[in-house]
Length: 130
Image (cartoon, rainbow, N blue to C red; front, side):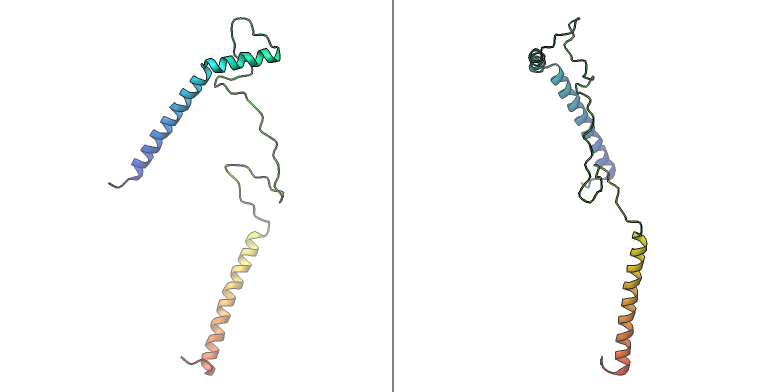
């Protein structure tokens, strides 16, 4: 049976929903893990940080998802000076790109016309016989 576009889209949305559900379950397991809790307490003990009152053992810098917000690393330009960002990277074009492109196309067209004219003249003179 052929796979239609609607069937493909349906499968993609189902897979996306499953992935999101699995990710949420993994985050929940990670947050409620005894090993994670022991690691957190051991890290605080090594740094000499006391637990806050009220029995809350979560660090104050954590968000609800359990990740610590960080600033992105500084952007390093490439060797040509262009800063590449992922996933969308605009295409760099020099200022005279379209003018040079039009010039090249015109040159190719004129070269093809000149070749046809030369072949036509050689046929008329009789150098080339068909």
